[in-house]
Image 1 (tube, rainbow over the protein chains, first blue to last red):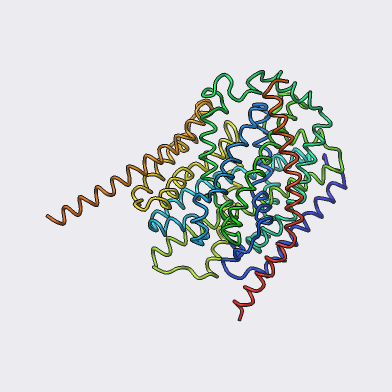
Image 2 (cartoon, rainbow over the protein chains, first blue to last red):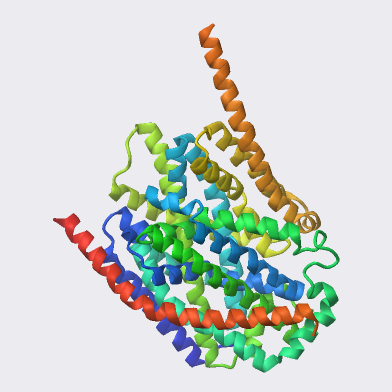
Length: 493
Length: 50
């Protein structure tokens, strides 16, 4: 066991505090609006804090650290497109302003308003599959992380997953978005202190010159110059940047866990402001963990497993006593992500899949109470699935790319449909259908292709998805109009 | 140190400093917003009950 009694005591106190605050929130949850978007009552600082908490989990640290460990300083490139996308969308209000003015709760709702319920159902299915497959690797990676840090043998990985998810499920089911926002506040306090501590303490202990030297000796020019051997051939070159800018632009307007933060904000101005400042915060969200991976390389050498670099760095570097506080911070990060993701993906399944099917079949909406019950049952089902997926799915290539590509199942189609649907009045449902379908082809290919192919062509498959989706939209719109014209001509005859 | 190394050094330290400052600001300014959020939710629930 790597933890002292003091460490264990800190973790237990933290868990009790979080569980208590989550369960206390139950009395504030009235209808489905409170449950999913906290009655649109969230201010700027809480919104930003909650967004950061949701999008920083133990898995975030692990996949970014893996990139730093495997690629050196050039992996820091991953931070810039995200930051840029947030800033541009926040400043211009591109897509998010019209969405906020429409006062919708989930992105698929937009599809039923702009197109029809079949398109909503179709994008809902892809969102649910992509989102849950994405979420599905979280428990395995994180339980592995916890077991390494605590010293619990790896054969207990299932038990770790179950305990962690059960705690999250209990307080999320009880409090919904309200409990997520309050517990996010407590969690962010720990999480931010933990991030600052690891970075500063790591630099002091390892030494800046040793870190730079480790990158130079392990990777040479390739680890420092992101455009080596050329801007087009480099792993983090132009292709990667284009893909990531498109990817993150779409993520921040359509990723359920992020867009729910947007819909929870109290007005359009607050929503936009949260996005602008998220640009700066998301820069650090990537830079600091990538840097920890580089520190792990300098401190532990390159012979260890890349996904284990960060937990091993933590147990070797951090003194006992502080380890408990740090683990509580990491648990904080994960639990807020879990609670938000459980809430987000289960709301897609319950509202956009089951709700739409019921509406199509009966012609009536479910009552608020029934929607709430359905959301809670779905949440439990999603939890069981992700435990199963974590146990049996083997990750190949960068974990970051796997997570990107599962999201890519619906991301290109969503971005193209939202852009055309909002800014081009003649957008047709056939165009939306083709955009969604064609955008999903490259990520599907990525998920089934052999490891060496997917690693080499990840960026091409990334931006290719957006290009195909755009082509699909144009062809679909033209075909729809042509068919429409033909019908009119036929009727005239 | 070459140009890229200096650039990465600036990026890392800028991120660390901005993250630290923003985090403290969010935690301090978040307290009155939490209070407002609960007040609004309490009022909404009371209206629904009536």
